[in-house]
Amino acid sequence: MGLLSRDAMLERVMPTIERVDFGDGDFIFVRQMFASERDSLEKLVIVQNEEGEYKQALDHYRAKLVVHVACDEEGNNLFETDDWQQLSEAMTARRMEQIVNVAQRLNKITDEDIEALAKNSEAGVREDSDSGLH
Image (cartoon, rainbow, N blue to C red; front, top):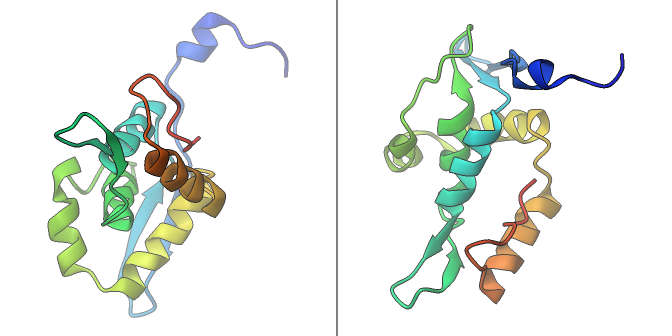
C-alpha cells in the first residue's frame, strides 16, 4: 500500500455492511455512510432558527442516523431521509438502539462526537464551521 492517486481516491468504494439480528428471526443490514451522507446527517442535527442562530436538533438523532445507514444486503438504502420521524414513532427503543450501536461503530461516531456536536450547537455554530461530528 502506498500513496493513493487521484483516480483511486475518486473511485467509489463499497462500504462495509453488517447484519443486525434482533433475536426474533428478524434482521436488517447497516452500512458505512459515504461522506455526503454524513454531511446530510449533520445538516439534520444542526438547524438554523428564525433568528439565524444554529442550534442542536438532537431530538430523534437515532432515527435520523438509522435512515442514513439501514440497507439491504447490497447496501441500498431502506429509507428516504425524511422517514426519520415516522421511523422514530414506529420502532421500539431497544431495536433502534441495536441498529444505532452498529451504525456508530461502523461510522466511527463516538459519544464524544455527539457531545461535541451538542456543545458546538449550544454555543452557536457558524454556517462555515465544523459541526463536531467527524
